[in-house]
Image (cartoon, rainbow, N blue to C red):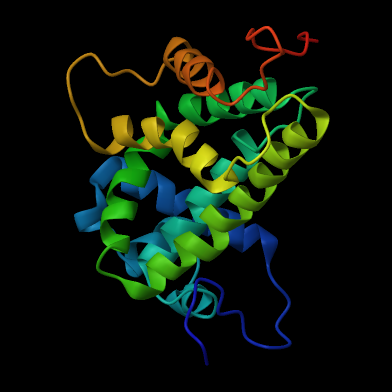
Length: 211
């Protein structure tokens, strides 16, 4: 059987109540005791389920944490689509920064660190979190180019790296006076979009009106 974060046995109906309890337990224990003390046994005891219930779906406790993190991000910080690419990214990045200012940011730091030495977790991070979100975000860039808001010839992946890279830099590389605030997000968006938006013949930036 291929390893991954979803090891549900074939033909076994998923118990959504148990799944929710397990994900909540993983988040609670990670917050209370830290990752060094996190174990499948501890999560099972907190969730009120047997260890086999966890192992039927997840390879290890890190895979449980990964799914718990994904559930939080999907719920609280989706890629939003607004009238313009600028406003789509401003809203989406503000939601993500707000999430990372709380427990999810505390959770993500060791999760990303663990992924550097855990190939299965690294693949799960890429395939189940990073790439699905980037596919949606690339479409926002593409539509911005098609509408004339953004200049032609842009590399969507470089655009996304320029927009989101500063958030992850501040999250993972601590330095003084580096909050993940709405004001910071607005400055990043304005700085990056200053080089992305299509200019008129007179040299001024042609910005679609905000709605």
